[in-house]
Image (cartoon, rainbow, N blue to C red; front, top):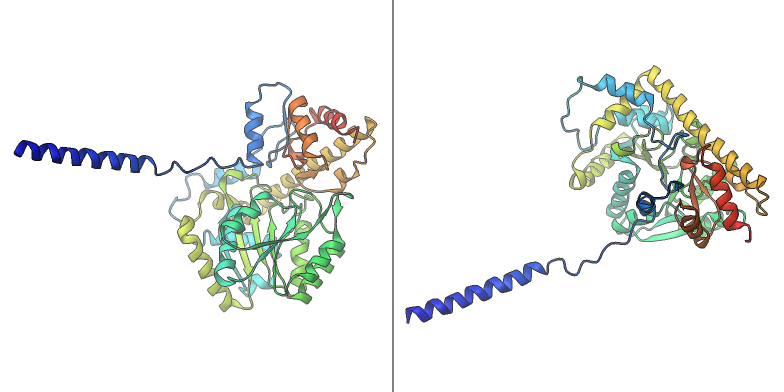
Length: 425
């Protein structure tokens, strides 16, 4: 009898273990591979290509004229100053207030009354992406019935950010494919027709992916129309200084909106203009009615950041605050960021001239009309596929060329390949 009982119990244990093993092994069987990121996937394909002639004009990171990554001298000098002199304790939830204060001066002006009167709620963020995401969550939490209007086209991750924050998305027209410039009339029409009090995502300068920016007069009209409708402008400013070489000029849109009395939001990043891509240094700021409101808003931004990442990293913030608070280092940075912008502008001119010298039947004027890191070439996905398969040239399939990847050594090869795939258009 005891023997049969032991056998019975053994069967139960065995069955239980088998059931448990099957149950545990099926936890993630339903998970499918995620689609490849349309931007990062380009670099993966480029790295896997053994061709000695391959060219990567897909990556959104600056390269020198030899195609090599760059660490700015002002950054190296700041790191030498920091080394051995700073601790690595946790920052507060809102990050380095020293870095934030210097960053606000770049966006709103060195002598801005908003800063003096403490009307800006601001926190250090995980670069521009993190700033956008914290704001998207803030929008969902405190304006739960609102939508976000996003330009067509835009940086692909914008859609992911507001989607994951569960903010419904609408779009507004921005780029005109035929002129390869701004579709200003349609943009203004969409601003006018959107429900009053809507949220609009705007690129402060060097629109990604098109490189098409409104003129100063157009920004003024956009600001006025948004004021009439009571819309909220949220600026993503990822390229201040990198676009024109002048941080003041690149902040013009923000200054125009502030002069018109808008309460704006702004995401800033030091990935491009200081080359701090991997340090993830940025800032989120919201202009408020008064200092009391700013305190409340900042406290809520910090509450949103807390379960996301607790507090931001310290090293990049130290680098930024050291550079911007030291007159000599800041002047060096201004010189270096202008140098990067000038090289990009020079490569635009060279690419256009090469295409025209090849006798291209198409107009390539838009290459030099656009600004910033990217050129929206107007090439079709099929033409881009040919560039990759026949010439080992890698870019996103929407035809966006990262001008940072164009050098004096490859601009002729790139122009010839583009000419070959577009000449029969």
